[in-house]
Length: 288
Image (cartoon, rainbow, N blue to C red; front, side, top):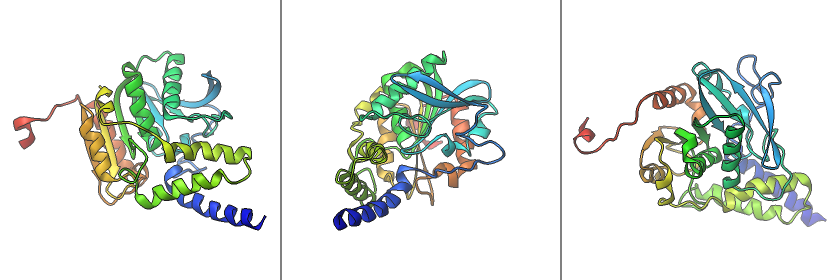
């Protein structure tokens, strides 16, 4: 019994360390008077692919899909939704098994979630949209563009990775994620533990994408990261260089939460990226 209590204490400490990456800036408060992620006026459920997906819609115009990170929710985009809702029909979603999108099944993969978003767009009768993905949401965005290329007009991702190891993720954090995930297998498998392990499995064991796979991303893509991101900047560069129409933006003095600490600049740059036609830069154009 003492050993299990000791393990539980160590596990709790590890989860606090991991939470900075797994649940980027989760908050129960929202700016202004709108509680994004718990707004009864804007919120709806869609029954798709074996579970009920929660989403909220704001604004009118061309559709724009927001995909949050591991363990997060719609609320993570409280600094982006009001800005983009001025010119877009913003569709903010709680991913499968996160936020209000409950799913008690044992399996969860990025591919499943990408197909979930495709199904939601189909149910909303949307043939395509712009996409912003943060952290795990960036991985989902890449997979949505790869598996359902007709659905993504332009893609902006921040803090995404292609594979789970220390060449992509800050070594200390990655080792903590793996250790915590292993520890979860040794405690009583309560529903809460199972839910947490399902999410940690994603970060510890997935995704498994190659740079060759990214050739399937046909849409213009803005690849973003902080210069002190838990996703190593050199890995973010690898992603940008592998996408045929990829742009790179590394923010100085920034970690994983680019959407928070640089919220105004982030919104402006991503907004301009969505509005500006893709321009291929090669040859003499590189001198401009």
